[in-house]
Image (cartoon, rainbow, N blue to C red):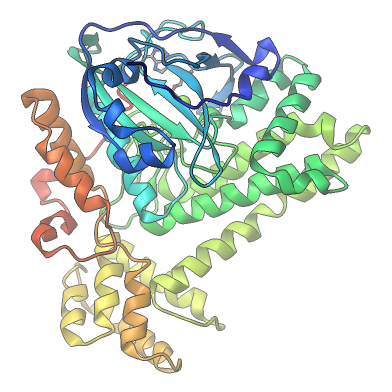
Length: 492
Ligand code: AMP
Ligand code: MG
């Protein structure tokens, strides 16, 4: 039996400087621990075939599927503000592209599949913990409706990887609408390879933004289109309390998907300055800094595109600045519109911005849980029991009462009845997010006890984040003080 992937590759048709051909390194004894069956079907792959010994070998990189043309992609990137001219896929190998059931081209990539010419000092491997973390959080993001790369499978390699201590090795199969990053453009721009930048831009337009091909100034329109998707994406992050953790330009996707789940985390209590990542000592990638960083990354993209924007340098800079100038408004309107929905408003009026901001300020002052405050607020629409439950989240409940009176006044001026408002709010305010202490518990059970039942249960709960799931109500709870996760780690 040979498993056939219906690959239709386009990236490998780009010039050889774009990638290195490389095969995954075989591993000892692969064991499939998770297969995302609905996603497999969506990709036109047979889940029963993947869920076989041969499937596990393919998903571990031990066997290359028929028709694959595996490559490691070249890219550069600013890491914490410092430019590195060559990063590239140091531990990931793109097997190829398939067209999914909706006609969308998707990359299928193995992450942790062995060294590549871009590995530098790294071993090309991934440990089980970070693989499970990426699996859980990326699938949770997808269920929340936020653009993201997906997880098709996780395989244990049967080999240890050496980190501070030996840890079980694993391979994640990642699916993305592409793996092209801001850093991919930087790779060519840094080499003065304007033709490479142009080839890449044309590839991106054809693949992700075909509508801009018709524009008078397609490259300016491309920059604006990427900017809009990034602005919308970061707004979505903030609206669910997500902190990416490593918004380096190489982790900033051109398609507007969330990519590279390293030390990412969802905040429990609301704190705009929140940082979880152990390596982010300056708070560069703190929760509330994310829009600013997205714009910083887009500015790096704009610099790469300058030679394409106009022949005259000053004119090109003006074009870039005009495009980048649109970010603040795009982000603010996506974020504000999302907040309006979170507090159940159907219309917009003067004073609404101050109303939500005052709630956020009260939440910050009172250490109120971000997710639960909005979820319980949705229930508060229906009656006073709900109010009691929201109040309990505030260190000083009076901080909520004063705000709630204004909020009730404002909602009473809209015609919608409470049931309608309640339903609308619940559809945007999740009950379940991948809370850090739950993710850590899943990893601990898998790594130390080879027990994947907690992983399966957490995934099942997070697949329906907007449903009340009474049997799993505890998953909505914030951590007890002793369960609190204070730091997260890249684990690379
Ligand atoms: P990341 O922090 O995961 O976004 O990775 C940044 C860069 O380091 C990318 O070029 C990765 O491919 C590379 N890298 C991360 N971990 C490893 C590893 N274990 N072996 C080789 N390269 C790695
Ligand atoms: Mg990365």
